[in-house]
Each structure stands twice: as C-alpha cells, then as structure tokens.
Image (cartoon, rainbow, N blue to C red):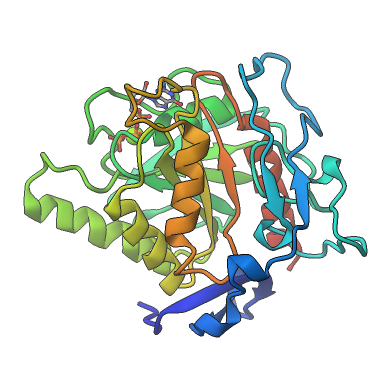
Length: 315
Ligand SMILES: Nc1nc2c(ncn2[C@@H]2O[C@H](COP(=O)(O)OP(=O)(O)OP(=O)(O)O)[C@@H](O)[C@H]2O)c(=O)[nH]1
Ligand SMILES: [Mg+2]
C-alpha cells in the first residue's frame, strides 16, 4: 500500500511508466497549508455553471430550480491538455452542468450502446485481466451506487439495487461498449454487518484501489440529501492520501424536502462537503451532482468518464 504523509492533489495529470500499462495519476504535493490561498485571497472570478452543453439525453427532465452555482476558477477541475483562455472567465459552455468539470478535447465517444455483466470477484486478483480502462463506484451502503450504474447504462436492473443496505458484496465488473468497465463495489459503513465482515470488505476494496492498474478513477458517491458523514470525509481523505484519482459524485439530488432531509437542500450539503474536505486537498477534486431518479448528471458523468478514459488510453 502506498503510504504518504498528508498530501494534497494538484489535479494535474501525469503518467507512470509501468511496464504493463499507463495510469492516470493526480500529482500530489506534500501538505503545506501556505499553498492554499485563503478564501479572502481568491479574486472574485466567478463563473456561472451553464445549462446543458453537449447533450446525449432525450429524456432527462430539467430540475425545478436548477442551481446557478458560482465557482472561482481555482475550484474548477481542469482536465489534461486543456488550455484555458487568458482572463478571468471560462466560457459557460465549457463547464459540465451541475459540476466543476471543464470539458476538454478528449470528451468524445461518451454514449453507452452496450452494457454486459461480466463477473463478480472476491479478490483483486480475480478481476478481469484484459487491461481495459475502468471506473469504480464506491460509497456508503445505500448511497445509490448500483442505481447510478443502471442510470448510466439506461437499464433498470443490470446492477441489483435494494432499499436494504449491503446488497452489493463483491467487485462487480460491467463491460461497456466492449471497450471499458464500470465497477460496482460493496458499500462501506454498513452497521448491521458483523465487524469482521465489515473489516474484510474494507480490506479488499482498498486492496483493489491500490493494486488495480487499469483503474482510471474512483467515483466516490456521497448522499447530497443529508449532511456530510464523518465516514465519507475519512474515505475521501484516504483516497487522497493514497493518490487514488477521485471524482465526487453527489447522489439523490432529487430529494429536496428541507425538513425531511436535515434542513438543507442538496446544493447546500454539496457546498458544506466541499468546505469540509478542503483541508485535505489543495485543489478541489472534480465533483458532479446526480440523481438516478431524474437522471440528472448522467450525460455529464459519461462525458467526464470519456475524457478521462481517452486521455488514459493515449498515454
Ligand atoms: N430518491 C432517490 N433514491 C435513490 C437514488 N439512488 C438510489 N436511490 C435509492 O436508494 C436505495 C439504495 O440504492 P442502491 O443503488 O441499491 O445503493 P447501493 O449504494 O448500491 O447500496 P449497497 O449495494 O447496499 O452498498 C434504493 O432504494 C434506491 O432506489 C436517487 O438518486 N434518488
Ligand atoms: Mg449496490
């Protein structure tokens, strides 16, 4: 396992030269709080997150009050090989809706035309060995990993979902367009499972993150309908410390009833989560708001995955 002192991602992508494959890495720097500009020091370089850009969808309903988020440039995720124009603003059409992700030249072939379950593995060694690039969905039990996978591939029950936490218990590989994988993982923080089983799950998913050469990026799912949980903050910081490329996916953004959901709207919970993890990261990781009920964020995630994947394949 790669153990590092507390470190911060720069979100500049570099490539390792392992003999079998190349892998995207986020470049990290040793923690140095002086590197982080204080909020007051950030110039007011706000942009508005735009309404839809490259659209793949014909059936995603629009949100009742779509948030117009204002992000300083420092909080954008700029993928590799993107040259932002001089000046304080990024053109509206270049940021994916409901996210901080800038679109780059590798965002192509994002449509899903075929999706097949391949296998369930209990150990990293048993996972498919064909070296195709993959994205892993991870998060607390019941956060909506399997539902998001189904939404991405437009199938109702390709991955099995349940109201009861703990449904997914292995590393499940789904091949997309015969050229890449989505990986559904067991959830963490499932309190009903016996302690030794929980520890085991933790061990094997972390082993998978650290050893899997073809893992392009982890997608860490966070429930945006409730306030931030300590275990999610710990998981985000663990991924950062171990240099595992990560995208934060906020789920259940359709649940908007304030009182029922702890008093805050999804946008507020998303912002709170960003603030809470900012101490672990020098730059904001890529993040995106989603709902598997309304399919919010589906096309945007696919475009984000496409640009990470195409860059990974080329390097
Ligand atoms: N309202 C709403 N409910 C959701 C959403 N995504 C998932 N759910 C519900 O949340 C519950 C759990 O969903 P799953 O997709 O099985 O969650 P999981 O993270 O795969 O759970 P484990 O496999 O147990 O780790 C189900 O009842 C889903 O219908 C969403 O975006 N909005
Ligand atoms: Mg599941």
